[in-house]
Length: 94
Image (cartoon, rainbow, N blue to C red; front, top):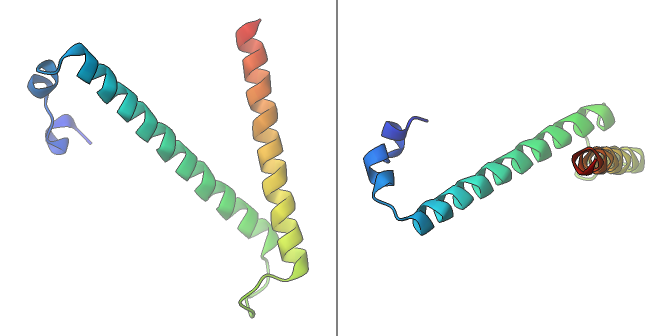
């Protein structure tokens, strides 16, 4: 979205004091992080659903094998993300 479309232009931003600019930058960073988390959650849900729910849905509840598969899929995904974050932190501190 361009700044003209969002209703904010550079002249409006130039009128902000440094504190307001910092708050705006932090707000935008938080919103971007929230958007990334939502996107990752969507990707995880889609990936695990395709992997674990392969039959037509006939019941309002998952069967035990589907539930176990989904739990394992999410757990492995989270384990992998944690491992990647630890590795990146180690690389940063080296």
